[in-house]
Amino acid sequence: MPSSFLRRLHLIVRFVSVFTAAIRAESRAEEARTLVLRQGRQKFGKSPTKKQQKALEAITNLARLETLAERLLTVDSWAELLGEM
Image (cartoon, rainbow, N blue to C red; front, top):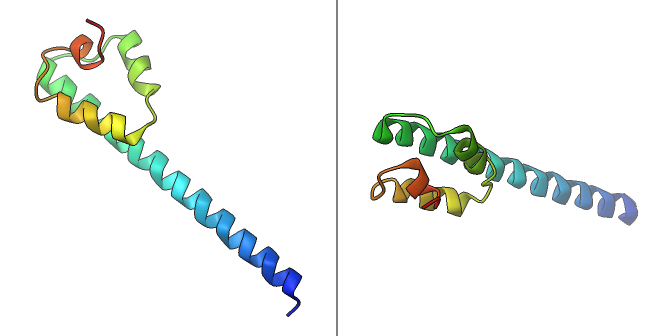
């Protein structure tokens, strides 16, 4: 096999690997966001406002969403959770 073919094949494999990892990370962030919403509705007895919902949807960083999930244990409102105090 020509080495140029192998180089291209290697690049394709790397691209697919990076793309797959990005999709997984996005999926994990979406799952974390859904969990924050479900647990927040349960704890606060209501859904977030549209503004709060948009703010939550704008968070794409998994670590930040996980931090929000932990903070749900110690806050009393969507505003406090999202730092709107």
